[in-house]
Amino acid sequence: MFTAEQLKKQFDLFNQDTDTSRSWTMTYEMLENYSNEYISFIRMDSSNNWLGEPHLSPMTKMWSIIIDIKEDFSTLLTLKKLIQAGFNIKITKVKRGKHKGKYGIRIYDMKKEPNQTLVKILLDFIFQE
Image 1 (cartoon, rainbow, N blue to C red):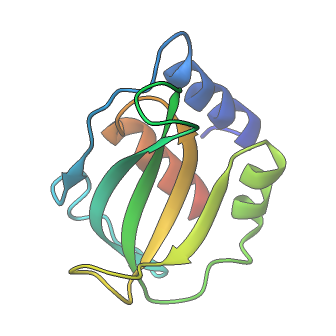
Image 2 (image 1 turned 30 degrees about the vertical axis):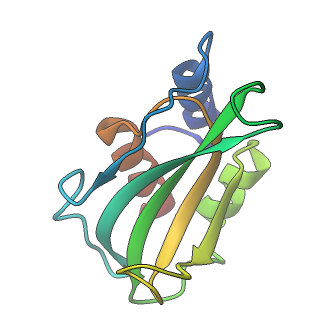
């Protein structure tokens, strides 16, 4: 199992030496059977955001792990450790679309599309026993 700092280094390597891809992801299959006492996985999304003038400035990407919350996990020590390690991560309500009212574990400031292995490691870290 990774420490929060080791996990942050894995995410940093994933973002190293590249521009943000202009692609986006919306997949139900990435972790379709992931479920525990806190959440059930619904879908994995990514979206792009211009950091200035469109097409002339750099972009950043947000990963959204769309979930159904079974039990509040916002106070878990593991989530706090990720934030202390420098993760830009938040839990926010989905405001529109098919999954309005569900929640997203939002990971900001990414450059590449979500990676199934990395997302699973992150969730396993947050919900470790």
